[in-house]
Picture 1 (cartoon, one colour):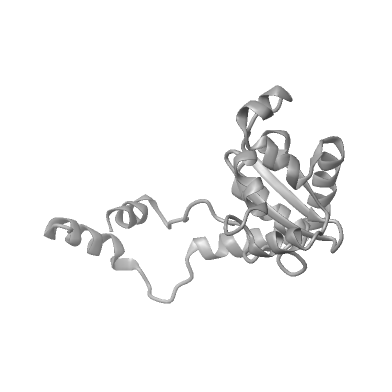
Picture 2 (cartoon, helix red, strand yellow):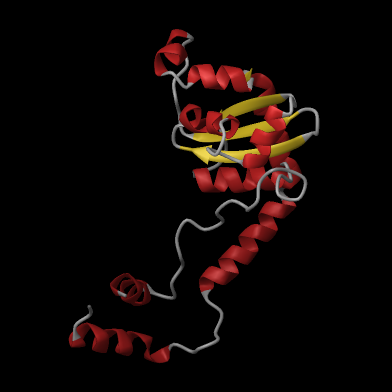
Length: 186
């Protein structure tokens, strides 16, 4: 519960607020989405080049490498990045992100653990390959940025398994520091 002094301070900070005025966050989001859509081809080339240099995994290998000892015996370590699941039979993609990709990517091949459409096609016998791409070897600064760009590059919402785009914004943008302080209080 906010004190009367806090409420008074918030009212004072927001006194110049104009209802209906478009926030800086909205403009940032729209510009970012436009730019990312414009750069889809360039991002696809970058990610394809990385995928071609790296090992691709089968669902069965991912299930095996869920075990940390199995991974380490192969010289593999978990990392922060994205995973690109490719259904070779349908030429469709699913893109996801994780702080520990080996611990997350295999879930899509287990019942009720990941994307149910990926799991259904896997059970029907479709052929999948999975690319695991560390954030650290890409030109992107955050997992959210990398994942959203990859989802757009592989058009995995319209022609793939993703149901939602990636996160465009990691934090909201405020008109000034006092607006942010007021939001944090609220």
